[in-house]
Amino acid sequence: MRTKFYMIALAAISMMLGSCSDSNSEFSQDYLADTPIKLNVSVDEPTTRAGYSNEDKPTGFVLVVLHDINGYDKYNYRVWAEGEDKNWKTYDLAKYSNDRTKEDVTMLWANMNDNVTVYAISDVDYLAKIDKHPTDQTTLDALKKADFLAVPQTEVKPTQSGINVEFKHAMSKINLTIELGSEYEFTADVDKKITDVKIDGSMVEAGYSIDFSTEKSPLVFYNYSGDPTPISPYRTGTTPYSKTNGVITKASATYEAILIPQTIESGKFIVSFKVDGKLYEWAYNKDLTLAPTTAYTLKLTAGDDKVQPVSFSVAPWGVGNGKDGEKKETD
Image (cartoon, rainbow, N blue to C red):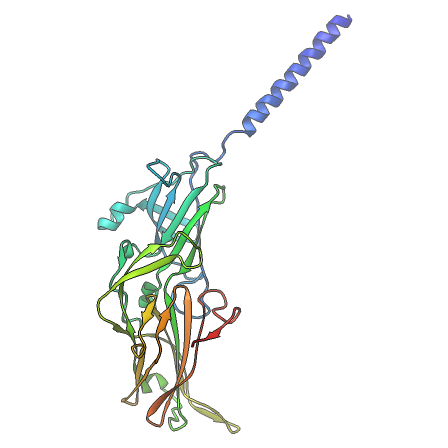
């Protein structure tokens, strides 16, 4: 009787061990292998209207995902991603860049253990170099075209939530304010009084490469070509002249432009504009180095037949744009 009891007990233990073994085997399975990769897209926020933001992301971008960075791997992908929010479709990059053919590519995780290398740029037209950088940036669409975004080389751990594609502004931004002297008492139509605004001195063609050494500035620019070309900026607002209780608010207009990062020689960074048809010009009398992911804020006052600089400062282009972070005066 006792022997029979032991045999029953051993059988029960054996069943329990088998069940645990099956459970551990199921738990150890690679739950990510050959599952689709999701994309979560974000953009460093500007504080003003220039270019893209999290509320107005690019609707397409070039994405590279490498499981094996040193060679061929069926889990290596070079795609054109298109869509919005989390609804992104991916297409073969070579065919799309050649003639805009959209051949579906489904990106899959190789497994749950191996990290992948990711980088991205926002414009398929700039795969090899930047040419025909928009010089007429007077519309929002043109300003966005000028706002070249990039994701520096990043290692990503496979997760069910997918890849965070976190774009940075790769270019340089100019914030310009033109304030008029008290002799210009414009109470309306300031936009019609201040005309032909130009920011001159920058090259509009350049080569670039992904900077693999840092996440601060995602691109390195080189091989500038062509002649310095005037940029027509986007007007973001105007303020009419007013006088209330003895307090005078001068007429002014604000503008934004996006330039390729570069160094502009002394005297060649020039802002010009007309007031009631009269031409004003101001030139920066030092070398000006425009750095990637950086915003430059310039305020000028025009009156008495001359232009005077009020302030010229530099700050990171991103969250706060110098308001939450440090803003430094230029030399």
